[in-house]
Image 1 (cartoon, helix red, strand yellow):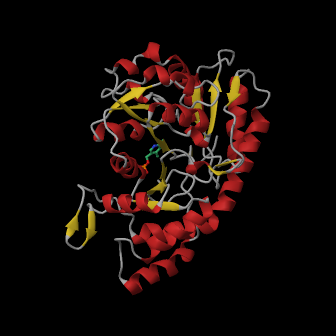
Image 2: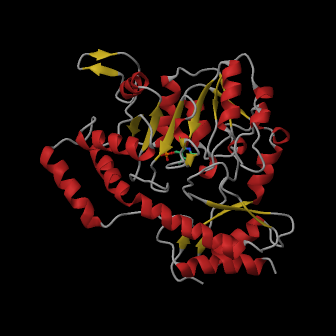
Length: 371
Ligand SMILES: *Cc1c(COP(=O)(O)O)cnc(C)c1O
């Protein structure tokens, strides 16, 4: 049993002394927010790192999702996945949009493109898929449907920082993609987020929307919000970028170690990384199939008793929460795959500082459970 609790994740923090010079700069120039020098520098650095043309930074991923929907004037109904963090659907409700849940693909656990068309109505204006666990959606199939029905596509790419397919960043797909830099994500700025925009004009509109709709000192063109990333968060992002490759490489090693330990355990299905050339190893989800002797919750509790706090992402499904469960599309018979997966999934601890001994302890407990 580990003496210290091991959580599903631990935020990555670079050495504190490396952050002091950034703080000194902020203290020197006395610009704390409103698109200051750190903010500008981080936008440039992230565009380069991610391989995208235009990025607008935000104070968190949820406000970025809200603003993305506003920027494209999405209304009516939006098709989305129930298998995600609750902010995906909440961003629709906050915009007065009706979420329409569509079931997921049993292999990728992403929105199943084959089920989208049946959910389209005259009110449908957009699709909001999630690259769940950083595994890319079937972006081509989704785009084809969007083109046929004249729908917008906004990707909730909160898990997909740094993920690439054969042609480059996964974030270039759809009309907009939204990132989260929350403490628990692969790349964190304590709190933070971003919208990847296709062109300068869209970025300009988004930059206005995240600053109350201001165009200049005396002109307000839209009922905007305060979505700006502060200088301190942007500075921290610049420092994190110096460390991100090593952090992701360590995640990869941990992922491989788990795979090695668990490959012969009966009843354990590791959710495979599929469709990406570069993965980010943001989560390590496994599914407990019927031939694993313990139920998912039994294993969850067994780990907990041993000071290991795995998490059941994503359980409960978004469609089970009170503000959604009355919707016709939220009914369980409409979402058989998502409901089944939500009962079987457990995400194991994965983060750069995770110790070898903890990886072994987790694997050992799972192996014991199989006996
Ligand atoms: C983390 C997350 C969000 C919300 O991001 P915040 O930065 O915490 O607001 C949205 N969608 C998904 C899928 C997430 O995992």
